[in-house]
Length: 386
Image (tube, rainbow, N blue to C red; front, side, top):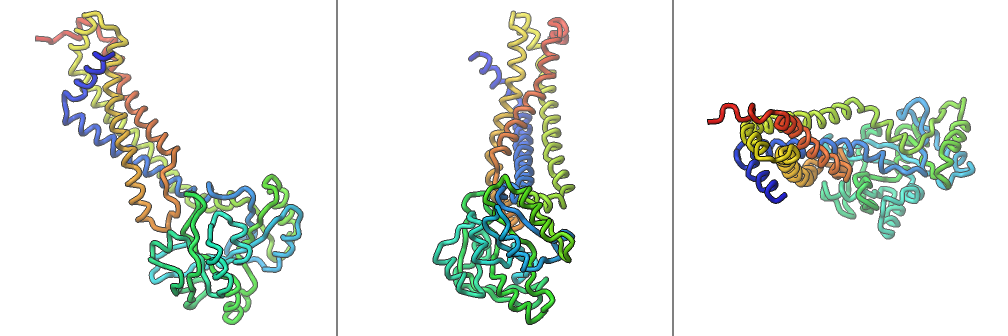
């Protein structure tokens, strides 16, 4: 075994430039593969972080159409419902249109009870509830713009025209790494108060109701009951689990996701072809050596181990370097994305897939040259020797 390993290392460094260039290609391919898979994971982050014990009720026709606020009490009275809150998308602009972050007008007294994953210090939550213009913002967004408690934040309304001034009263953190820390929450009452003066027809209306369940397994039944309450009304509802609601947004960009996933696997196929070519060249150059080894009595298993070992050593060592580089690359790319992808973390599954890809490249690239070396007769292998 020691002799075999020594030969594998020597063969690997016979052509250092060729080995180096192949290794660099594998490193780049594995890093790119991991980055693309992390992008796909980021797209599904909201789905993965959703709770099975919450429902979302919206207008049956479209999210564009609001629901009357008085639906709240009817939903709250249903058996199996523990809490009900509501939210409205605001869509304001902070200084420049490129400064995007999610903004919601919410019922401050119930919203954070329904979302315990948003951890707000008690004194900051109390200040928020007492200030009609108060805001609680995620620490990622606060860090991005340099905001701190007490800062005045002006937003230029798009759906709700005008300049809206808010005061940061709290900064929340996520309960774990899967929690979105980019959101911006303010009082729906403040929004509704101004709307009554500027556009009374849109007052006392909200975008979605958020329904907490006593038992997650009752979700389908309670969803049906909620929709039955408002059947044949002017604003019929569609109630679905939080996960299904999030998947609805992902489905809008499904074609993009399919392209990203296809490209990630195409990268592996390309580097597999490059690696296979490298090993094929090496095997052709050493045909006579393999023939001599067979003539000396070395078994086919030894020859296969020699070729596959070299292929695996190159692919796995370069793959390991590529996996290490995924982390700083993803961190840098995630920072550049800002709040576009609130959660941009390298998952364990991505690491295993990257490691599996490196292993697959090594095996596939070495199998054919090893098979040919074993099948080639000794006399034919020695042909052309001086």
